[in-house]
Image (tube, rainbow, N blue to C red; front, side, top):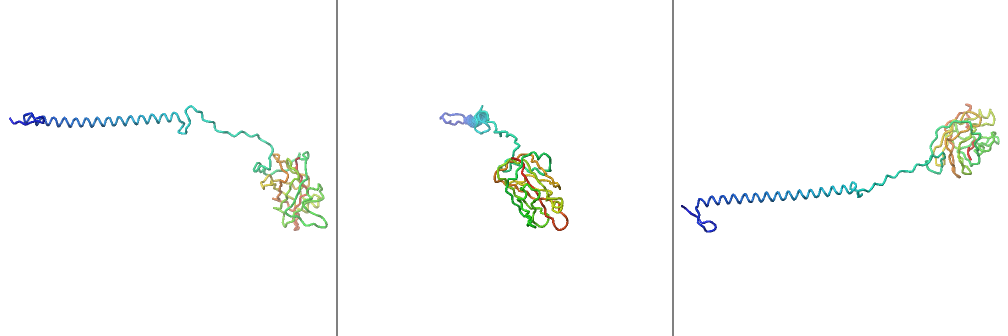
Length: 265
């Protein structure tokens, strides 16, 4: 029987030696495989633990913070600021920019007779008819409290676009206007001159306030504003002719106004 020494120097059967060596090789391979699998399991376990810790930490952060904004748990968010309601007022101050509105077209109404009025203002006109036979047609005639005089515009045509500028001497609470349309001296003077149909009123900064729709009549016409307007000392109101009732078709279309008064105090 053929023999062979093993690694310890002992004699063994060569066939047995070959079998033993094969078994040992198989054992070594299995052991390495097991150790490799065990190492992989340990690595996966460690990775899972790390992920679990991270997820747990992330959950704690979400619980103790408010959407990542740094607010601690239990802290009540401050309520959103709300504007305090302002009291509705029936007065408008022309000194406050855009604190008013265009009231549109106002028609003459009764009741203005009992409202205080003033003609204590400075006035100028964009144009004035030249004096004739010693008669003046200047804008000052609108505040002389006389129906024998009138302002007559001085442009060719009907006078649309011509303007009056009125500046009260003192601050006042403006409630409306009194207007006498046309040349009210007589029926003849009224018929021979044009009258205003629409008179646009603007505040001192050029913002529209209202449009006065005048009647083709010699009587006093009262226009009440929907709200009181505070006009300060030095504020100027403008009155612009937007439409007219022409006089006789004789080439003379001079448009006239006899009186303007401010209602209020």
